[in-house]
Length: 327
Image 1 (cartoon, rainbow, N blue to C red):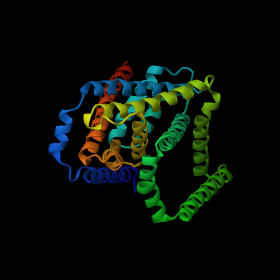
Image 2: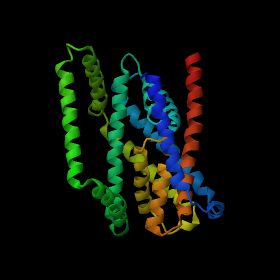
Image 3: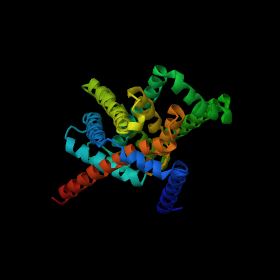
Image 4: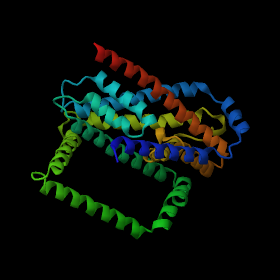
């Protein structure tokens, strides 16, 4: 099968999955109640949402710039900013493809594509840790409500279907297969062309991933990561404050809902459409006895506002990159 055909099948399946999740999220919605809630929205908080979301992008640019600067000191902040924004707009349509576009825009003689991708892998690992920290913090702060929801809707269904022993067995088997794969590549890297190419790619990825160790100001990396996820929680808080129906919810609630919403990013659908709406609406309905329409309204306001910002900033960055290329 050609690479083009494989990509068509992959992205088609992704679009179908997104459609199914959208249908599950929006089926049975009382649209009169939805529009009534929308008319009560406090739009000043949504304006604040855009400011906070823009700050999250700035923090993300600073963090990636800090990671890549030791590898390519000639790299400019504006170049990193444009690459991130164009990558984000591509991810809305083709999940995951934006990361490759980002690497292409910042690659140079000093920093290969593999090294750039390694820095993104490092970012993703840090973000995964941040999601876990948010989830644990929310569970600790409000276990009486969040803990019950987590056990009944996430842990028990997963443990009931697979069993804890099966989960650990799968993890062990996967780790063993990966170890065997890396050993075979290393052993045959000088005798086999494909193994040599894979070994070179892995080396570049590890170099990019290890760029944290070369940082002169490691606290800057930590603080920008904290800044990114603080802004994400603030974005959810702004959305909650924009709806009078959810006046009783505060920052801890935004903390938990932000962690739950970011779990949707694991599901490979364009822009998280459907997955984010379903998880956030389910959380709000289960935790706060709110109507499903209220949860869908929260998810729609936050998700679509962020998508609008990503598209606007992405188009501007793409236009700037196009002009620079022509020059």
